[in-house]
Image 1 (cartoon, chains in turn yellow, orange, blue):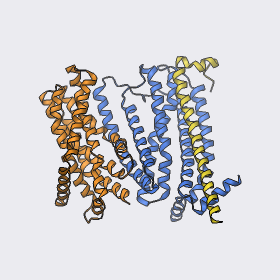
Image 2 (cartoon, one colour):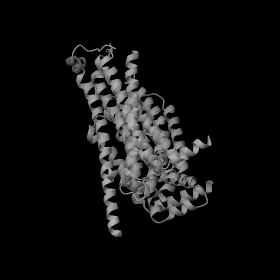
Image 3 (tube, rainbow over the protein chains, first blue to last red):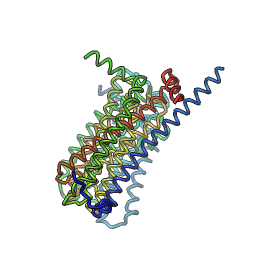
Image 4 (cartoon, helix red, strand yellow):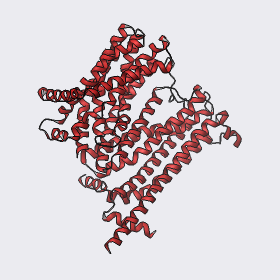
Length: 62
Length: 222
Length: 251
């Protein structure tokens, strides 16, 4: 289980394929960060909306 | 059973004949799309001959799709569709009738028109024959599969664009084997294999897809 | 046996599924992170180079899992769709709706990484290879599903219409794949296949499997999370949602 790379620069260069390899991993990481953030956001806005509605309903009843 | 299907076909044909403008505009759409391509890519006969199967098939496919939203919309608006759903005969049979009628007023005229357009693309006689034959066999599948999309989007806003989004990916196998049959004739390989697979797709489209369409209609009318 | 069946149906109601999903999500997130870190470590740091493709082959570690997930999620969607049509359960439609965006994203990632792999390997971003083309069509199917559901206001109709579409799509996928393959062999002399993986050393295989597991756990977590949001929205006005909202306020 030795680390294959000699230096960090080698790791980044990916033997000349850096753009392609990091382009793939980078976009994948971006998507996998953005999707949960969007999901959390839409849930939060929904909860806020439902609460506002509930409050409005309660006020109407009073 | 056949009489019931026949009655639906006759009724839809009669209705279609009352609105011949719709019918003609689908055909003109096909003609215009096919004529745009030479203007877009240039008039070299060799290039056009190579493009012809794909262009004519895609044109026919888009023209069929254009006429899809009307398949159920009129009956839906005047309440006939609800009557048909409640009728004692299976809804799937009714849909088969409507699909056949749709084919008679869209697929069949398109197939008969296609060889004329094929001449514009410098296709040989045998290729023209295969083109007509492949459209005759393939367009029923287009009507059958398209009916599912038309039923799912019944009464929705933006229904026309939505139908194309749903239906076009499902049309791809028909396109591949239809255009492939013509291409095979042009390049001198036989078209039989393509045509028989196209026939299988058409049987699926006309006899199996209507049951999915019937389910979709029930959902849309609930 | 009978007992288990009852339990199963108990969790099929949004009211009891909601808290269960809430408890499961952190576990799936944790598993996704652990598997992901281990897979990335093996794939990027430890695994040796491929003598044919050089370091470029490392894209396979995410390309293959993304492609698998995109196909698998469509099957799961179709499974929920069939369940929903057969038993008329509310949960199934919500699950299918929650899965679709993740599936579409996986299909997109598969295409994106495929293009970035293709450029150095074959010198072009895109080839009309049978697998790539099928993946593109799969993305179209996802987009159709999402667009149809978005266009229908009544959630019950949206669920059922989506279910019919998902089932029709899943019947069509093998036909599409077969026809694209046929078309491809006719039109391309030298077929280049993206998934012709380099002869993989076991360490590479492990890296890929761990990342595939990580993608699985990630998809489950996101889909469950989204399903919970959908449940709240659809069941608003019911007692249990009101209770949930109150608890959210207390936090």
